[in-house]
Amino acid sequence: MRDALTEIEVIKQLKYRYFRLLDCKRWTELAECFTADATTAYDSGRFAYSGREAILEFLSGALGSAAVISLHQGHHPEITLVADHRA
Image (cartoon, rainbow, N blue to C red):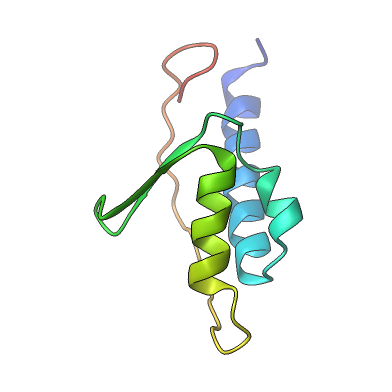
């Protein structure tokens, strides 16, 4: 396992890549941010999806229109590593 600071930096970069690709509507590249078995919950769980394809279908449907402009930002991450493949 890489050291904890390296792992945390990798997670932060993934988060920022997700925001950038989402706001730029680059769906193919955004798909690479998710594992095949990823799960998401948006709006306090009102919109919950399982699987990369379902997540991308929701995001592109909700934000894909040229009339929709989004600007996601993330600051001050609090990341705790709890196992080799969990944070």
